[in-house]
Structure formats: C-alpha cells, structure tokens
Length: 234
Image 1: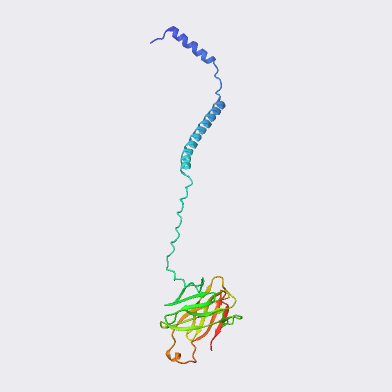
Image 2: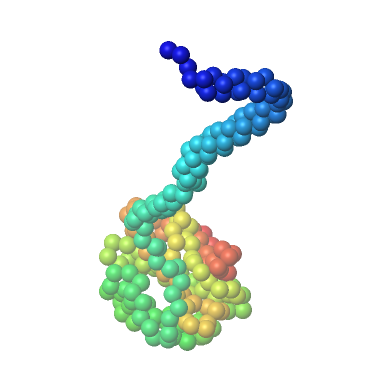
C-alpha cells in the first residue's frame, strides 16, 4: 500500500527537524540529590511512625506501673492480762481508834482504850483495866507490860507500851518461834498504846513448871522496824 505524498513529505520534515535538535544533557546530579532527599524524608517518616509505635506500649506500661499503696498493718492486739487471784492482804498491824472504840482482839475478847489506859474483857473476866497514868508504870523511859490468860484453847496476850516513835508492829519471841501481834493506839497519841497477840497453849508439863516462861521477849517496833520499847523475860 503506497503512502500519500503529503504524508511522506511530513515524515521527512519531522525527521529533518529531529536531526537539528540537540538533546540537553541529563541532570544526573540533581536527580540523585532529589532522590536522596526523598529517601531521607521517607526514613524520617518511618522513624517517626516507629517511635510512635514504641511510645504507645511505653505509655501504656507507664499507666500501669504505679506505686502500690501499702496495706496498713493491723495493730497487734495487746494480750489480755491473765486474771489471777491475789492473795488476801494481811490485816494491818496498827489500828488507830477513838476513846472507847471496841476492837475484837480474839474470839469472845474485846479491847478498847481511854485516855487513862487499856480496857479488855474475856469470857473469864469482864472489864479489866491497866492504867497508864496511875504511876504503876514508869513512863520516864520506854517500857512494855504483859498480861496473859487462857481463852478458848489459846493464850490471849496483851499489854501497854510507852516510848517515842510511831508504833507499827509488835513481835514476840517464844519457845516455838517469833510471832507478830497488833498495835492499838488512840488517834493523835504516839507516846503510848496497847498491843495484843494470841498463841497456842504450851505443853502441860511446861505449864506446871513455874520456872518456865514460853514468852522470851516482847518488842514494839516503829515504821522503820526500829525498836521503840522491849521487855525481856527471864
């Protein structure tokens, strides 16, 4: 198939024009620089995206890592004190009375004081009396007196004492050991008072022996356990 004459003419014109055009050199350096810039931008974007991905779990972890609130330790309950029965307190060794106030000194025995001296009653003899002011006792120096009588299977011992000091107790040395008696005095009266004690009856064989004294000595003591007055029996 033959081509149209005009067509051939146009092709020839374009061919000649193409031969006259000198192609400009390819800008390789610019293309390479632009490529590096694009690659840097892509790496930056990737790194930013990667850092964001890393920060998400870190933030999530940070949200969960919190300082635990310490659980308060309940106070240890104090052990309940064991209730133990306390022994009964011994009766006081001193009783301060008003004039005429009766004291139950032993079974069926009463004792009381007046400003004149000691009074007592027993089943065998009522209303007995020993004076502190009639001159029968030498009150110029410390001293102790003794009266004793059997009462219900025991000996009831009592007496007056006088001397300087706050009397707190009386001790009797006997052939069976030392016993402690009690002191009775008037309120406000420290120069004299009375004392009493009970002891078992001695053996009959010794009772029949007039030379035997089962009470060896009587000592009235003050609050510091110092003797106020002493009676020594032979």
